[in-house]
Image (cartoon, rainbow, N blue to C red):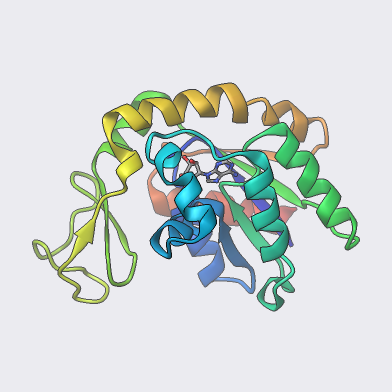
Length: 216
Ligand code: AMP
């Protein structure tokens, strides 16, 4: 199955994609994570996108499309995947349909996780994650059980994304409304869109998504 998790930055796409991956044979494909890895590895792409990504702007279509097209050819994608953060523009959605079509595949379901801007700002402002295992936390909603020790791996070092700063969050939401939201009618007209209330508690959102996928 090929699933698109659709929604604004901070709506919980990453968390839910990881949960689907843990409970199925599908893998999570996060273009944001691929770009962060490229920045960390100081590749040509990483060096090129670092500044504009930190400012909260979208990376150009050509770069992300090429990156994703190469990634879905890898063997671990054969049992299906959950796209987390792609597509984010109409040209990306069209390119995705085309690259899947060449392999007789298609997007099976688009899950729209709906959250309003106010809640998103509060969520992103408090996010941090364990440097060692990547587990995500939040200052208010999901602190570590023991102060400054990762619940999952015992790690003691945590990081915050540079694009979770107040200024970048504003840019990311603006980019979402202007460039990504127009994808809703695109997928709605194809009958593949399933809306989910992303304001609910994480386990509840997970249940709703599971029910939607089982019914698809
Ligand atoms: P995310 O981890 O999905 O929140 O993405 C973090 C950042 O990576 C975004 O704010 C963009 O700068 C960049 N990015 C990730 N996916 C895409 C995409 N599909 N198109 C353009 N930029 C992207």
